Image (cartoon, rainbow, N blue to C red; front, side):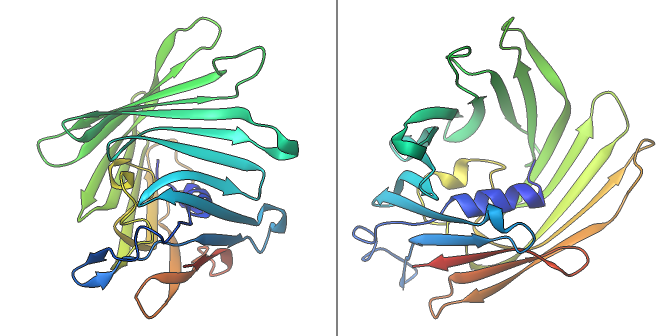
Length: 269
């Protein structure tokens, strides 16, 4: 699910490019600029600060390197991202940590499979999760998730599922429901009118529920209902931006519900 904390992780992970192939690209007469680097600062947990750099082939991601400790490679078929593989590169290692594969039907994401913890004991990964996306007549998208037992190979459907609502390339609502109870979590998202740093990166707009929206998120509000819900909300988080002369974000500041700063991302183009 697209949660505030997962958003921080995704935004901190992904940024940088070679300008060689995009200097002459434009959208409505404006030059398309992709960020070269992002620095993430966590005031409360400085040990989590990170610097991420991405290499590109045109507007396709080749790889992302974070703190020279981890590298994620992107694999395309045409303009579609079909797989990402993350490696531990500390001490000159190149050990696979995780892998995610994407499947499309008629140009839309139909499923994804995430596999984690590749070890000598589990050479094919210990944890596997499969997500299936179905497109409803009202324009919403249903996401159902299945987990696989690494020992038995048995797949089991998870209790929670999500209904995603998109508008103009932005995820504006997620309703997470439980099959076994009346618990419902509803998240609403608001955006500015400026281009996200990720808007023109090929293939990312099709990766549903992974924070690659068209515009920049400025507010996240969520609430929880159900008989077992102790805290119902609403809980509100906000994001402030500083932009360069081209209208792209150069600084994101995340504010917790109490107004304190949760994280800062700085973009370099």
